Image (cartoon, rainbow, N blue to C red; front, side, top):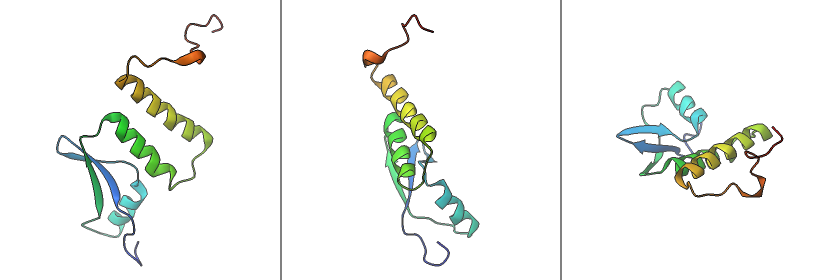
Length: 102
């Protein structure tokens, strides 16, 4: 970024007049270290928590090599948000919460 500038914008969620980074934290930190006062950004308005998580996962998995554990945790986070938004979502045949083997 120091030599060639900014190729990709940062991704931001605007919620109640405050911006929240959706990934791209490293790019933001580099801009701050370089003393930039402005940085190109794509701002999303009116996102649900679920949509924000999906954008965050997509932004990060496209740019960073995550461990399998980190990917599974991100998918679990998205699933949790989806189930909050869709309370009638069934857990499917793998629902072990009612299993006798605990």
